[in-house]
Amino acid sequence: MMAVTAEASHARTGARVDAGRWIRIGLLIAALLALPLVAPRYWIYFAGLLGINIIATHGLNIMMGYTGLLSLGHAAFVGVGAYTVAILQTYFGMPFWITVPLAGVSAAVIGVAFGLPSLRIRGLYLVIATLAAQFILQFVFVQWQSVTNGDVGLPVRPATVFGYALNNETRIYYLIVAAVIVMTVFARNVIRSRVGRAFMAIRERDLTAQVLGVEIVSYKLMAFALGSFYAGIAGALLAYFNQFVNPEQFGLLLSVFFLSAVIVGGMGSILGAILGAAFMTLLPELLREGSLLFGSVFSLDLGTVLTPLRETIFGLLIVSFLLLEPRGLAQLWKRARQKFSR
Image (cartoon, rainbow, N blue to C red; front, side, top):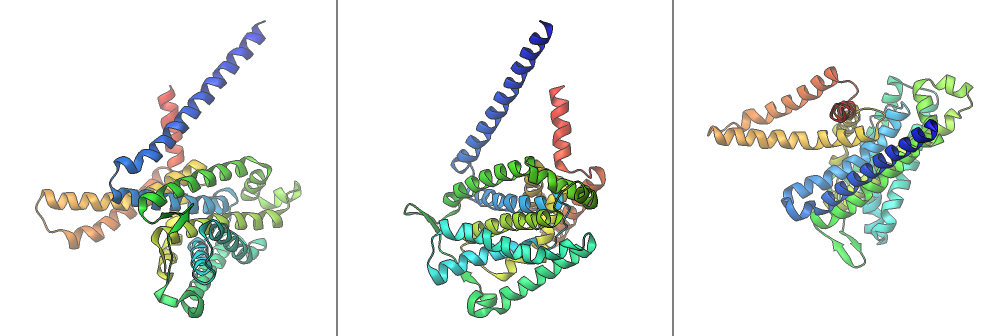
């Protein structure tokens, strides 16, 4: 009798937890949908950019955080997705509901091609291989002028949904929010599946995983394909978001940006990818606003000083954060929730 009572109590507790989780998710979605109604247009732009960065960070997190495949070429795969959209639209007149999936597929194919060295090398050697991918693809973006238009770049017409043009930040914001939700749920389900467990086994010790029956070759290439697919989707949305594609948008600094987002957020965490992307996207802007406010309050012309100082503060915050909490923002969030629940 006592066992039955305990099981019933446990079931009620689990039901309350599930109900509370769905309530929080519903409130979050409602807040995201209502954001354009209350926030300035300037912040809507940053919300859209943040959504794109979250998708790209999810991809790198699958490769690096869950599978242990370090990469410094993620921005190049984002560029592949963006240029796929621009080329398919400019030369073939394809609509966005075709160009966006094809952007992900093309980035995945190229990602697998550059991921082949991961079958024999790892660690810093793999970083050098992916760095080579970054420079090779950047060279293609610039030099293949008959297709990419070189340094001039390619214009991108706004996406159209049922004849409704998404030609400003507010309209395309909803498309980005929908994409973020779908891609986040998909990444979560993949990690919870057999594929995700294989990824983590390879990350911990690939030789042991191979002895246990994990096909390392297949799963490493799958990780590169999936991570690059996310990058391609992010690049496609970025092309429609900016309505322009240029090689300068996909330089090495952008790859470092995504790498920092994964590390700061917490490697091997879906929530960490979201928090890391938010930190890396919004903190420089908050520092810029703070420097402008400081200058206006004290009536000082500190533009020449505050700009490099802002970048220095940003770098020091990242380094300090990594020293104080190597597991990232996701671990801090977990601790805060545990403390609050107690």
